[in-house]
Length: 585
Ligand code: ASP
Image (cartoon, rainbow, N blue to C red; front, side):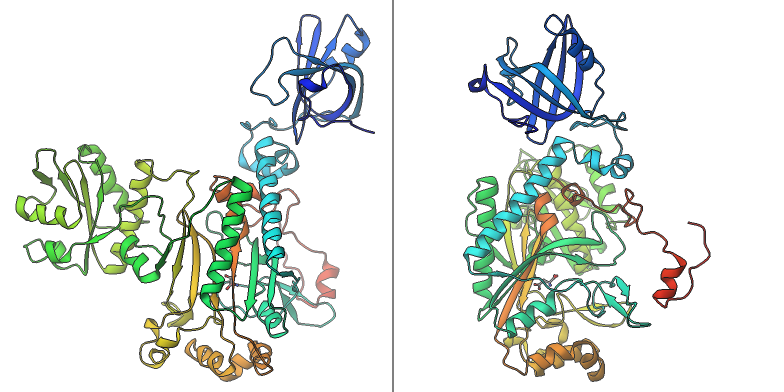
């Protein structure tokens, strides 16, 4: 037996017992006639004591231990004289009587501690060492718990876990596919799935009315911050349901996870339509941990001689409670914030609602006290508050105000990581205009059903057609999304047509699915959660990378195994793809 206990296990009740531990040497220090060693494994740290008076040879061996040596040590558990209440095992120590080095270690390139001295690059190169750090181990263990609790809930709810293939057909729609050349089929390629969407729908046609899979998806996108080319979804589909059933089921899943992972009881998840979300928050994923919702001010702010407002499609404001004390410098900083190229506002108007009932604004020239009071009244502001106003083209002004609202939320400490606020966003538009391609694209995906009451708009005003599509949002981040699907060939053909796909193209790409719809397709709907993001949010972190054992870096590289990499000339030949380009790596 390598060990009788883990390094996180020993307590006072173990005092006087003989135990064997195994683990990694975190640090050694000499004090008087003693050598102290902190021994670590994923369960915790235990202090070992080697006493010169008892065994000088053993003590010399202990002195020679380097960081990250793997050792096995036997000894008696003793109550500590100097207890450490910061450690779970801090009441006891192990008085070593035998010790064996199981594996020596080179000096690690960075410290294996929560606060490490290693930068991102070196930690990723030595990810196996980074993964040893307790903070990272916590993340990976949290991920495991969330996966297990999700399975447990879905299994109890009658879902079947079914795998779908990774080698499929390329049907780029949305992101780019990763492709894999087929050796046995010259000149042909598989694609890795961007999601199991069409397969899970086929499973519904096949009668497996509750399906889930915690599975990898692959999207060859330009990597924006914190995106991974391969990522994990909790992917689900249900047959014989309406939108309401799906919302209830997955709200149940979210509640279950929060209860069993965090011991938090989530109340009923509020709902908002996409249109309302845009009007009140300027975002389709509002952070509702705080208020500061938008007020549209066109009727009180326009036609008073201020050209900037008069020319604007939208004049929109937020009220920052208690911020009338903001200094010139703070207000200038906010103006600079919204004027940054990433946000792109032309300027920012402010109104201070002074404690004495007067108003001080950046547009006093155009608006007298009475007029400013009308703004304040409309926004429900009180003495001491600060009004911040942006104007311009509706969609842009809303986006800019969304950024400012979130910034104010940050500045005022209203976005706490341990406050979890879920939200359903419903009734997304079916389509979205793609500027470059000059055509409509599916906002969710082409299998999403339009709302029956909007069918007639499909010919006249496609942009106004709403879909039976929904997103679950947590703290301003999209946690998951899905839709009620089309299960009728005619309607599916109609949507492909709206997306500018010819009949032939639609049949070539999705004939298998439309064909299946002709063999008894039940009504069905589903959703997928972004599992990596869920782990990061529940772990109170921003970076999903910290919750993936072996993530890729910002250029899509695994720097540890150095992938992607060149392949051998013979592989090019076997795969019938043109010879390797003659470039130096
Ligand atoms: N397959 C969709 C996605 O990956 C989710 C769904 O509609 O179920 O976003």
